Length: 238
Image (tube, rainbow, N blue to C red; front, side, top):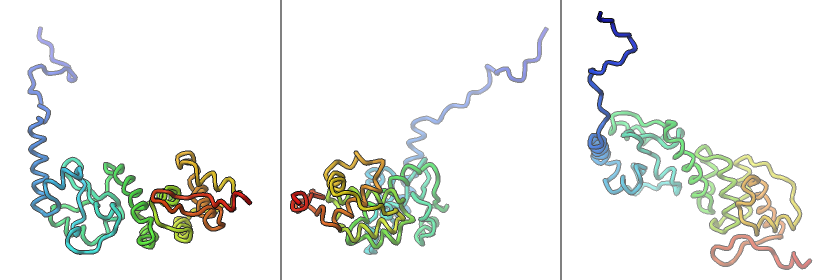
């Protein structure tokens, strides 16, 4: 007696959907890159070198661009589609031009959230300088307060940034970082001479101590390249 197969029973003779082959994936990726190259958004070498992180369309055209890597590399490719690395970029005028070349408008998506986090940190560190700090203050929507704190604290501590106490104060205030009471001189010196990672959970206080140390004369900028803050000898001897 032939029984009717159950609805959930597998059909052993049904055609099996084959997974996309490696060659198909390679061909699709090559076609995608060719489209980007044809649209003038990159070259084959640039795409490979930057891991699918596309340069700003105006970079290299003589137009003055920001020193921020977030602005210089505003587009990220993911699974053969182009995304904005930050939602704030959707209002930039060049996005419409890129949209016409791609046939769709790039948008920010959670799939590039990791790139956004990195780019926000780049934005703060790239603009934490005497020459670019005003731009950082004007574009704080492209970064996070903790990124500004980190750039000020590490920039002063290790000397990779040329900002002074006045600029550091402006940056911290603009980012909304509450200023604590001035700490004891010994604590200020301790923070200025101890590796930053020891205070990774207390960076706001550390950043402000670096500023207070310079303002009160407890510390000063080191003269040698790569030397950040050093204690003022006269103060220690007092």
